[in-house]
Image (cartoon, rainbow, N blue to C red; front, side, top):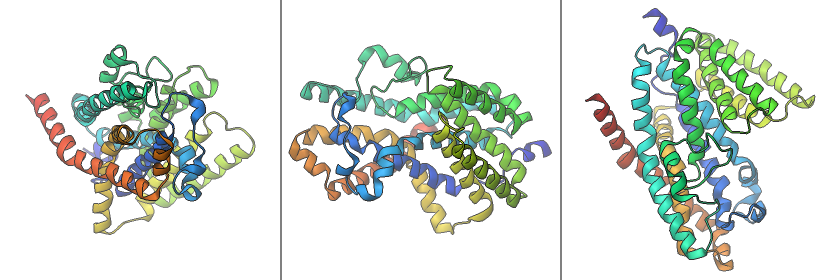
Length: 362
């Protein structure tokens, strides 16, 4: 019992991390707003961020919001470590919980996006943004293995490529659980370091090593938080030193291919430090943060189908592009995506999770 307690932070949930995953989803949605102006698989048709709404403020997100995906992977590693490292039955209950969490909404949005993609191609004569591979890729899409063999594989519901990376990380986490439970800081740090070497050397042309590096950095951060939860000031001191070393490495030109991912991981580390040591939001704010965090998965998976519905209704004409630049349309689209995320969590995700877990319990 003492060993289990030593591997678990006594906290029902992490409110700032709930907010962080919502903000990460919002960054991805904003990053993909350019799709309204880029309705073609031609990569040379990327729009100038200056034509997008509120460009003066949002241009950094329009350009780099895709890095928020790495934040999801780091967050996932941290949260899974919190959920499973102290549980002796973790390996038995891991996959039922992951299937219940990911697959019901994935399958629903995959069908919706596939049907809408087909309707768009029939009307416009080309695919919406990313090439579609149809029935050939369907088995891999269903299993969320679409990016395991190809470095770029974005058909059906585009954001699910990142879930494919995450499922690979889940498999590695599940296999490594005995070692992670014995050495919750050292073991994931070694795994993250190994993935770093793969990325740095360009040994594998794939997003999987990047995902593994960031994911296991999140697991290692949980291991560090276990040791630091009684000494949060020590954790802050370590992070200050780590930040200084990162800045020095950048100035010396030592950080290249993994610089952006390392920056995301470092920002996430600061967020965890704030959660443990600095910030305790009031109860009403915690409720809001948790509600927004619950909406994240739905926001992430529904925003492409919503885009498809809108472009099917409004088209790719010059007049439609003028409309897409209007702040009112922009705000309405974001409200629609947020509403879909909230409704999805309440009426699809939660009931589906309960049904799937009941089925596994029989």
